[in-house]
Length: 399
Image (cartoon, rainbow, N blue to C red):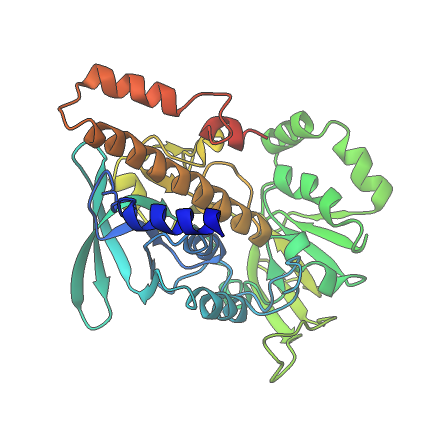
């Protein structure tokens, strides 16, 4: 009893304990991050940032590389849903987080400010409304655009019996007659990717079976002619005139949240010589692609080939500090929905830690109540970025 009484007296005369004052961020901006692009990569980045209560804006143009395809596959828990359903389900879940804004619009420009300490993002919203926001970091999830040949009927069936990825869409056409649409050297190497689906394969190389291309193919795949003969894979070198759909393998009024399997399409391939058309059930293609948006490149992001240069050991940051590139658009050269999710989450974690590292430097300096020179800031940075530290960014993201 005496102890409790003394404790009560001590509590009464002890000075009041105040909660820690709110610490100002290193940079004041409208958002911690603006994510440009609402495909799987952009949605994953937004989700990852929302989970740690980052103030995030996702601006979605409504243009997606995989939108033409019937279903998105190899996504655990969502295998076979339509791309639109996948985006809908993701946005519905992300919208439950109170620090996220999901809007439709097209970003027109990203302007670095004050040595990339923050950025101004300009966008056009529906109804000819132009807006601008400031943000500490920018995430480019702008995707790629496939450059399709002008062959009549090809674009209309892209993603609906004519695909580029056997992992994404091949299983629905297993044990069906298949074709490969590509240059000779690419078509030959693609054979190995689809043999487990069916060995009845025709390579439609569209006039590229030339001595020069045969030499290129031999360099890529020594012994390729023997290999094709062993498998009875045929090369069709005639120039394509059209690909005509004879049967649609889609399931009418299918539930977008469920897969359809199998899919029985049928096409007739016609040639400029107007002789002997060939029937195929499905095709896999290898066509070039390009950046869907110039926003990153215009902001100073370098390209590796046609991809935004991104540092895999640095959370997929580009050569422009504060701008990250994820998904199909970046230079890690992996293209599928699970990888897009991974790249978005990877950048979200790195970006979150980087912002707090910057905040800590500014807050430590402010606590000293004096001006801190550049040399002292560099020393502080070194102390906050020790390689052995569990939050050391580069060490965390090495694989």
